[in-house]
Length: 77
Image (tube, rainbow, N blue to C red; front, side, top):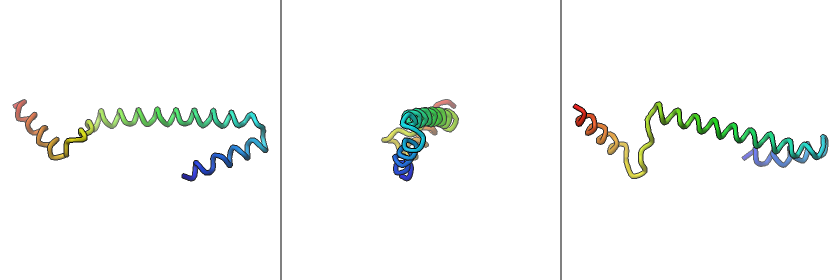
């Protein structure tokens, strides 16, 4: 919430004291930072899902998932 309030103040300060072209530079820097953040989130999500299991389906409960795993283990024996 604070970031949304500070952003216009930052733009105004930079444009008044440094130059109008810095509006474009700040937008470019913010866009690159957001792309990097999205990439980090995607990589982290893939790592967690691959190493710690898949998410449950919306209709399944934890108990149903445990029962299904036991049944799969019994079928393998």
